Every structure is written in structure tokens, then in C-alpha cells.
Length: 148
Image (cartoon, rainbow, N blue to C red):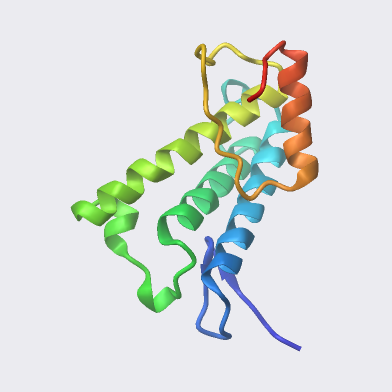
């Protein structure tokens, strides 16, 4: 029996996993928490320390880490990428911002709030399950949004 500890979309050195598997697990964990947060309403309704606020924070952190660290082992973890330092850190930070914005928009979409949508929005949904993706599509259709 294999044992695996997943930390923020990173794989541990306990066993050898491919980076793409670590990324997928981090994204799945992140989106599960984002959807849990959405069930608690939108951020403007959450209290400090509420299930919605905690789940959203954990979910966004996992999504960002999965994207920024790309499934590296803990020993290869980059503090620059955590703190947006140096060229690689700034590039990673910029990349993660799109995922974080998408997470917030998904929470709003699932709650029928489309007030933060521009004319054209790109949602980054990588790592969602088919069911989660379908929930987003159904919510967008209810809001009369076309999909490309």
C-alpha cells in the first residue's frame, strides 16, 4: 500500500509521482474547496473564519500552488514563486492570478452573481471534475452567457 501526503499541490519525496499527477491532485483539491465555499454564498456574505471563507482560502491557495510550483517535490519548492520575487516568481505570480480570479468568478457564477463579468471573460477551469465543469456551464446558461 502506497502512502502519499499532498501539500498544497506539491508532491512529497515519500514516493515518486509524476509532476502532472501532483498538479492534477492539487487542482482537484482546490476546486473541491472552491465549490464548498460557493455553497456558503458569495464572499461578501462570509464572516471571518466561516466555512465559506476558510474553504475559499484553502482552495485558492491549492490552485495557485498547483499552477505556480508545477508539481515539484518539496525539496525543489521555490520561495521566489511563493513571494513573487525575481523573474521566475513574478511570472508565476502573474500566471496564478488568472486562476485566482477564475475561482472568485466561479463562486459568484454558482450563486447567480454576474456583476463582475466583462464582455469577454476567460475562465481557467483546469482540474475541475466533469460534474463541476457542468455546474459552471449550467449556471452560465441560466445567466444567459454564451460559451466558446
